Image (cartoon, rainbow, N blue to C red):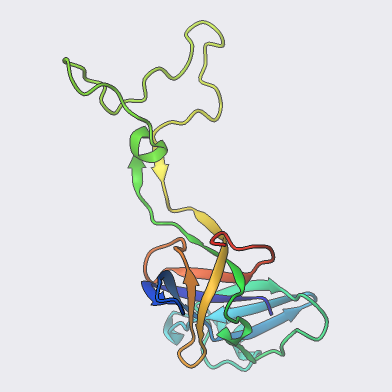
Length: 208
């Protein structure tokens, strides 16, 4: 397996061998039971739902894998090669990662609501003095004659955040298999207790 479902617990710092502090994000990764095997795809679960709030179809789907409760989240992961596919009902733990691995973390960013161009796109804004009233306005957004319309893709005010985002090239600093914790250098998308997906990634780290 090359990925796990987890939960972002927050940020902390660790110290390396030279005594320098390393900012890390603590992720509770797994254990994720294998719910279903379909060809080259492995369906993993994470968390648990209350039986009274679980649809019967989902509860039956979980019982076929030998699980007593239905997982809160289900997600498919590709199997990298033959012989690496776990069996249905087995649990995939954080032990699949090791210190030094380069991973990519996917989550849903924090929602910021409706924002203007200064906050959303880092516009400089207008003058602040001499009676000016366009301090945080976007200014001109399109020519009046040609093409007489707003060009598609123009940066405008609108909804900010609350979108799926993948942070690439993060390095695993520490793996705590006993507590199912993964310490990843740098920040990952999402709020505290937000669901994330951690996958192995080839190539160099962004912090090298």
